[in-house]
Image (cartoon, rainbow, N blue to C red; front, side):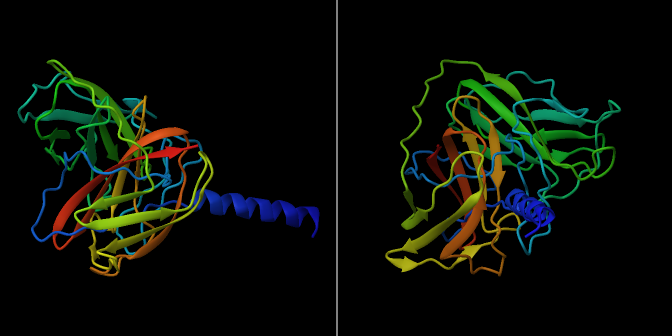
Length: 312
C-alpha cells in the first residue's frame, strides 16, 4: 500500500472510532404506567460498562436508528453554566428541603436574549437532570417553556445538600444551530445533609426479577464494543419498549466532579421487542467511578436501575 493509502486508512479508522457511540437497554418487569422521572435508590451495582463522556475530547453522538432525535456532538459535561455564548441562568440559588418546589430558568443566546426555538432531541426540546453531590437523588425531567423562553422544572422533593442541575438542549436557530449543549448550575438545599457512600462496583444487576450481564471491557478515552445479555428467571428478555425514541436512556455521573454523560442505544427500535442481547459502542473519557442511572420501559412502566461502574 502507498503512503497515501496508509494515511487514508488511518483517517477512516479514526472517523469510525469517533462515530461509534451508544448505550444499552436493561429489561425489567412492570404492568402499570410510571412517571417520566425517577428518584429510586439502592439498586445493585454493575460494572464494566463504560459509556460516552460528553466531557471528553472527541466525544461522538448519534441518534438511535429508527428514532427521530439527533444527539449531535458535544464536549459539554454540565460542569459550566456557559458555552459558546449560550448560558443557563436562574434566579434560584436555593430550593427548600423535603417538599416539591419549582425551579425557573432560561437559556440565553449570544445576543443576550432568551432562546425560544429548540430542536426536538429524543422526543423532547430540553432534558433536565438533578443529582446531589454524593450522586444520590437522581431526577430526569422534561420541563415546560413559556412563550418568553422561561422554563419551569418541577423536581420531586430534594434532600438537604449541594446539588447540580443540568439542562441538555440543541438550539434550532442562531449561530450554533444543531449543536448539542449540556450546561449546569449548582443549587443548595438547606438543612443537615447526610452523605451516602457510593455503592460497590459489580458486573451484573438484577432489577424487578430481571438480570443484565455485561461482557466487554473498555479503557477511558478508547471506544469499543460491549455486549449486554438480559434474562428473567433464566429466560431471555425480549419485551423492552421504546422510551425517548430508543430502548433506554442512560445518565452517568463521574464521582468527584459530577461530570454528566447521557447515552442512548444504537440498536434499531422495532416496536415492543427490545432485547435479549444488545451490542453497542461506548466511549468514556474520564477514568474512575461513575454512578449510572438506566431508564427503560416494559409493559408500559418506566423503570430506573442504578449501578456503579469503574473505568480504568
